[in-house]
Image (cartoon, rainbow, N blue to C red; front, side, top):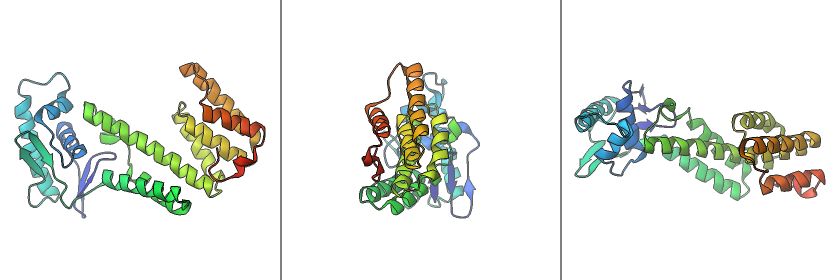
Length: 257
């Protein structure tokens, strides 16, 4: 079996993908998945499903959802029917021999970071790209509202952006500057307050002999940050701006900036 939570929730058995059409059941399984191997209490499930306004028979409804989920997982490939275990304090989803895209994503990003640190940029880039392919969209199609699921969705998005930054760094270290210029322009348009993307774009533009454009990117970042947050660009962005103004030779080194 395989569980996929980096996007719409899917369970597969190698031959077919299975999804849940009932939102509450999907949220219940997702809550158990993000705590896989650990106990999720009934109170936590109620909080995820109904926030601060649970129905009178919330506890009974949770029992129904869990019963239906067990049947769903059996049909999806849990032939032993023991993936969800009842404990005195709550419920545990046991992965057993099942694979899980979140675990795969974390392992690939760890591998990528280690390769990057060792200067193995091609291998690092491959790991980051494989990790990014696992993220199929917003967690639960963007419908996660409970505290744990919302926090998890935020974590996934932050990890995805970090992975994107690292992949850009790997390409930059390999001298593939022009490949990332359009990507970074798009990321800045989508995440205008994330200063690291401005920094990366300034560097690759400079290394592509487009110094004037790199300086315009700094002014754009400065304008946005002042208007939105009342702040000046961060220290690393200001240092890079000064280095570009003086054509600092350090900018020609891999991963400088």
